[in-house]
Image 1: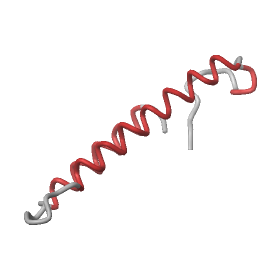
Image 2: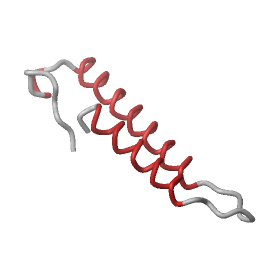
Image 3: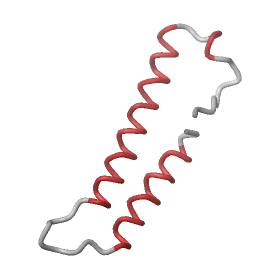
Image 4: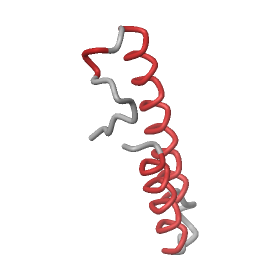
Amino acid sequence: MTQNHSSQPDAALGPEARLGRLEEQVATLAEAVRALAHGLESIPSEDTPPEEAARGARLAHELLLSKGL
């Protein structure tokens, strides 16, 4: 699921560097989930345009790709 942008494997990194990388990945995933949720949320009495859901999915995908996830 992850692609390392560093030339060092995870095992060669110290615990703090590995934790920092993990925190960055979790933040990116949270941002992608927010983009998806925003694209899918709607008021029950209103129709959600399919373009809105597609936009949220595209944004989430682009966020993940930009971070190498």
